[in-house]
Image (cartoon, rainbow, N blue to C red; front, side, top):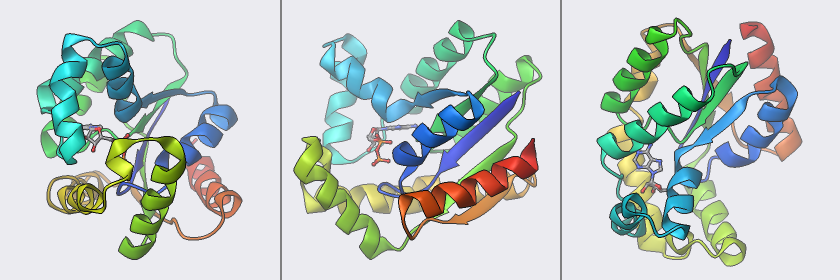
Length: 191
Ligand code: ADP
C-alpha cells in the first residue's frame, strides 16, 4: 500500500497536486477540508460545529477530524493506498493516524511537503477566493490567521515525520506541471 501525506501551508497547492497523484497512482483522496465542506453543505450536526472554526481560520477540534478519517479508512479497506490532504494538522492527529494505520499494518510511506513563500501563499489564496466562493479565501485576516495557525500547530509535523525518516521537502514554487513532476520523482523513489 502507498500512503502519502500531501503537506504544506494553506495555498501550497495540495488540492491541485492531489488530483494528479490520485490519477497516477490510483489512490483514494482524503481531504479533511473537502469532507468538512460537504458536511456543511449537507447541514449536518458535524458541519454546524465545524463551520464556526473554519470561518475564523481556526482548526476544527482534533476529535472531529480524526473521527472522519477513521470512518473513511474503515469504508475503504481494499484501497491501493491513500493520499491524505490537509490531514494531519496537529501532532495529536498524526499520532492518531499512526495508530489507525498500524492496526492494518499499512504505515505512512512518506510526507510530501510543499514549500512555498508566504507572500506567494497570500496571493494564491486571494486569487482563489475570487473564483471559488470560499469565504475563508476572501478575507485577508482569515488567510493570515490560517497561515499563522499552520506555523504554530502544523509545521511541527515536519520534525515529527523527519524523525521517522519520512519527510520529503518539495519546492512548491513554479508551474503546476513542474511541481507535479517533482512530486512524481519523489513518489517513484518510495514505491
Ligand atoms: P487550506 O489548506 O487552504 O486551509 P483546507 O480545505 O485544507 O484548506 O482547510 C480549510 C479549513 O478546514 C481549515 O482552515 C480548518 O478550519 C479546517 N480543517 C481542514 N482540515 C483540518 C484538520 N485536519 N484539522 C483541523 N481543521 C481542519
